[in-house]
Image (cartoon, rainbow, N blue to C red; front, side):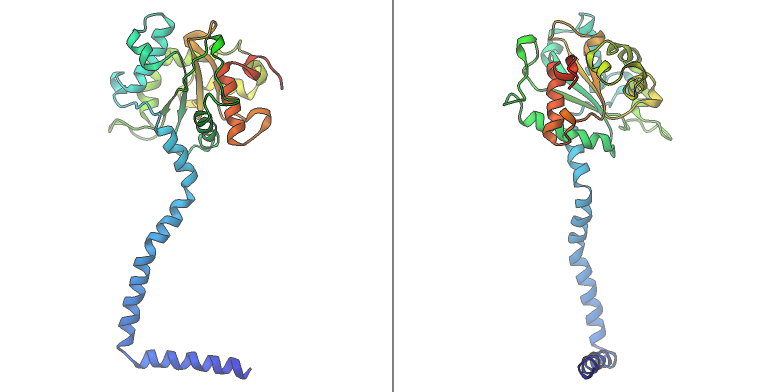
Length: 276
């Protein structure tokens, strides 16, 4: 107890000295201000780290983005991409566009602050980094493209100052520009093996597919597997549609997700009737 009283007395003396020594107080105040200023970068970096995962996913998707800037005139990058898909199906695509977009690619509709988009993004990145290696080899023997290709469209993009409320460029212009594409997408995959694997017409998957046909219910992530290189394909080149998908064999790692994607690309595994 004597030791505690001694310690308490020591700090009490310091407190009285600071109180009675007026010139020390401004120095302490200034010192406190500088301490706060110098700690701001560390605070900012700490807060930034909370969002690193989401930012990494968003940054990756942005690197493949087709903007909807100009969609009010149906003249955006994203419009031209879907125009190409529709023209290619009808046999009217130019050779320049074929060279530009290719025979096979993913089109993924995403948005910011989308948990599902963040969940599946590591699969795309892992597939890209390991493309044409080991288990991630495209099956070119069936006309499959040998080049990894992904295009992304952010459905929460705002390109028009006149948009109000919950309106986005996607809901106001883009979906209507390509309403036939989205409406036909609902039936394009009904006969595909993956549709049956996911439970058929009465499944949650079927409900997600149906949501594509109504702009108000459109979900993210929604990814189309477009293929014009294989002998058989559905309307508008849509082979399969995937959403917030699972990794192969139920895995959750980026490699398991990438295995699902390479099966989707190659139209193999559960995308070709395999049940396990």
